[in-house]
Length: 619
Image (cartoon, rainbow, N blue to C red; front, side, top):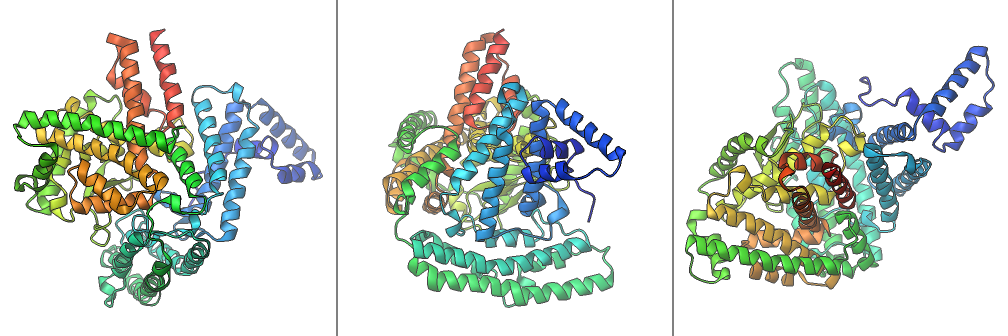
């Protein structure tokens, strides 16, 4: 076992025992008979040290202990953080015992943080306290809703996740012999975990908590892709193909034999069993409806998700109306672009033109990827004009893997390892080029890479003065809101000079506004899948392939689609407020620094913080 990368300090342990409500541990300390005067002196010194700690220091000790315990409970999170202590385990798969332990964990740390005097905190300490407490309360509230009964759909499929890790192209390292052995151990747990997943799904079937059929039929080909006859064609064999030359011949031979045997006897049977269960048992029991409103307690369940996703008090009905208003506004801006390019016809005809005209379709996947590389070189030069701090982390541009490209979104981002050992990854979906028009390139890159997700997430990971739970966590509405806000910076960063690329930015913003309408339509108002597809066709230029994948995405991950526009509108609102209040003294680089420098805050906390900053600037 390597030396720990995250260590609980002596002060943290003292606080956990003496100031944070651990009754069992305190009883052990106070009831023990000291054997020597030295022991008595040590205990007295420890007590004096604890007494002298400020409320902020006590809170930081709680965060430190929480983070360490959280990593052990969630080993995959540790792997993605670059902490390799738990690379040989997957953690609990949603057993009843595991769920009970997770609830007890949240309650324990809520009790501990409630013993901190909030009135004694300010600045970063206050922000951390508010975020930590809110997150624990939300976790406890969330246990009322049985997400564990629906662990799989086409968008978030743990078996796809295993394949990405096992390919050697994701966070799971394959650099040492120990790395290769760690992954075999994880596969053992994954194989055993299938029973838990199926049991939970059967419980959902018994209680009417099941996924829509339209989603689950898309899961079958994802699983079937790994049911190979030739072991060497499996993604799980790729680490053997790329085994380091430094391995001894004996280790190479042994590992190859073990991987071949594991793929034959565990991996393929695991995927086959899951495939057959879903095909033969689950899909016949799945529902024909699309939204959460059809589930037991679904209306309240969705309202909870909306609150957690947006970190606001907006209701589904209010968000639905915001979406309708934004769709109408963006349509008017698109009409201005139509005039600029001299297009004669209706907005819907313009949609069809930009969707189908050959000039907007890439000739090849290679051309598409090169367009993003060219844009990277351009925006790297202009980013310092708007940002004081440029993250050190790098990123790669890669196509989405073939086994998941049909159900994947247009693009996505995977964070880098905090220690720099693994770059971030900007995934571009190159499936069906006719559905990926050229005019989407600039806005997609701004959102996912610079100055969007790569910029924000890397900047956050590189912060030194905030607790780990904030460095590696964050509010979805901030993260996705920042991504969409980043798209609006194109003209300031020297792009969108082509009217069609600016139209692409408007189209991307329109799509996020449409998401407000259809996500709430599906899950709060009972819209059908077909009604969603019709609304998207009437109000956007999206090709059918994208409309289908996006509609099914909204069905699969309720409320997540709300984060983009709600977050963007809040950040833009705060920028406008700062510009109006500060006038000529407004500095865009400083504003962006203030938004990013404390990590992905809940929107309600971000608003209070930026307003305090504005007042301090005026003073």
